[in-house]
Length: 241
Image 1 (spheres, one colour):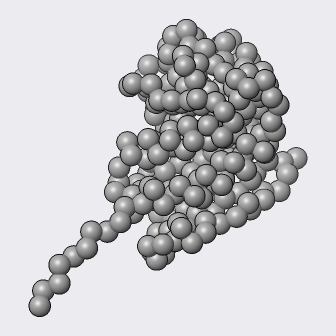
Image 2 (cartoon, rainbow, N blue to C red):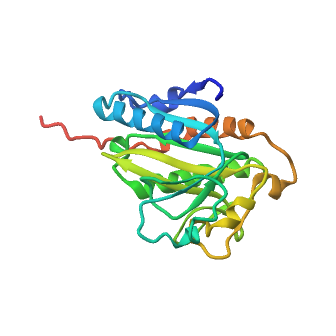
């Protein structure tokens, strides 16, 4: 049985500075759950926000049971045939190639209305990357972007994967940050379609063991603090006298 969801908190005054309805963010910790349950919850929140844009943005933080996913692409070569996969596979409405999710990863699903964010998907992806880079710096890990590759890296090792979907400028899916544990399930695919990529984790980079929930709490704090950076300040309009 999945543990009941826990609301970590809501964004403080910084993220509400523009005074726009729905400009706050609610964060929920869902514990460990099956992929299908998390997907259904995302669909529900997206539908609610589409019907009423005043609903707050949400950030779902969780840990998945083992699963593979692949985005909407005709090229499925990253699955290496798929019949050999040791865990279930889902094709979903995000960009990107195959990846693995499972215990030891923080899964973060921001449900964000990009309308007040300039309807700029690339800016949103860079915002996620910067959030992860700042988070990893808190654990003395020097992470960075790589040219033309979405995600976050430690030198040539990938520590976080990003894949988002957008409906009517409302985001779903998000990112997976490797915290600890077994990374061998990645060996059954070509992660994110990148040949000979090495996967790493916070545990491997630091030699320290952190719980997924502990890292999730750090994600929460940074997301609430940095959501204001994603918003677009309306330009001042001239007053005709």
